[in-house]
Length: 212
Image (cartoon, rainbow, N blue to C red; front, side, top):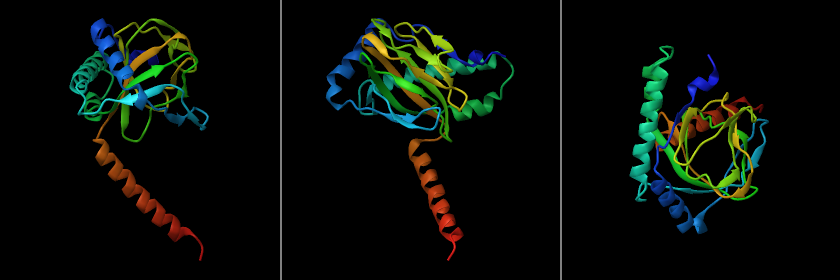
């Protein structure tokens, strides 16, 4: 099976008007936009150059985007079911909690290096393209071996693990806007508590293993 069969593209998930509203929301709050960092595929911790703002539960766009994201996931599950090849109950259990619904903007020269979205509790990523009036800024997998030509309002869902290397090439003209979120199996607060517990036991184990 071609790996790309595991990807689901949903054309025109958002209307032009809905995309413009989200772009306006970013520009209204751009003073609070920040950079983000992540590991590249060679283990280097790199600073990305795009700007990002988070859409929190108190924001009026939150419930709208949450409903669209949940629709993407339901359609992706139907897509995977159609192959009669995967453990769908486990997949459904894993795809329960969107984490960090964000608006992203790439100016000229800005990009995100090749990376993966994997964490121990993260199982999928959702991206929605908000505009087309830019050049460059291509969403790609596997070090540019698979280019995704997303139109305004198109969404893409794909697995988040070590195999799904992806990035966005530098924008050469205009500005690129998108929505992004990660799908996890547990609420973020519970995940942080679990990870802190593991860290506590790991730290204590390291202390016990040190020679006197």
